[in-house]
Image (cartoon, rainbow, N blue to C red; front, side, top):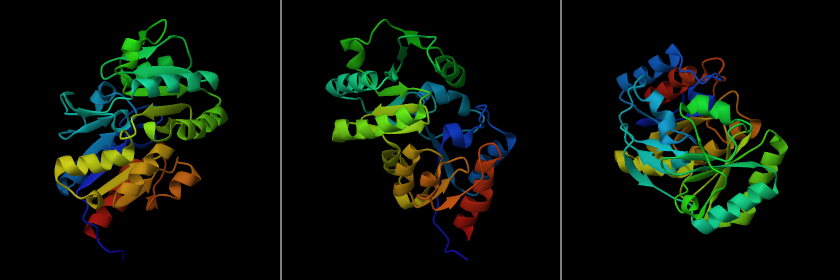
Length: 274
């Protein structure tokens, strides 16, 4: 039997992990979160979504702690009041937009309060609006005023190989001025260098008075690997790539087959009480 772990908090990614492919919370997922509470384990969520786009999770999951939106770009209370935020440097924002344009990706710009697009009919805009439950603001161009308050820029394309290539290029060209990682196969998120899911683990540990190794994490995408590395125990979803699974402590089933709920019961709670 494996040694017991002192797990005090489970941090979950949202899309591809906590919700189904149809962006729904199942009853099994809700009950699993309640099981965590009964075991004395806190629960928190992090996502590339804006905080407003996670608000529909707060009541059904009875969330009481900080929510980490924009991959840690903004931490908010459940009433969506801001705890802390990390904005992209305007020069880096301009450089990012040029990079995405040069590589043929559409660009979305997020501030703490707004989601800005140039074409409401562009790929994935309607689906994203349905997911986060609010519409973007359509602008003819991204102005200096917009870029002075950027929390996240997302590059969007259904050419998935192009997104992978752009991720590598962004990491090289932007260097330490930004964090660039895919939150979905078709999304490349660029945020402040301190706005990544690894930093979410250390920030939540600070806010909750925990050690990072007392936090367990679960996710499915390359940007979740950063939080795997900082936490004491990590779970990759069955729908994750082989590369992501290789970085986790354990693997559960997919988000089409109650992978989150099964991970809580067969992995997290067993690890905590082994």
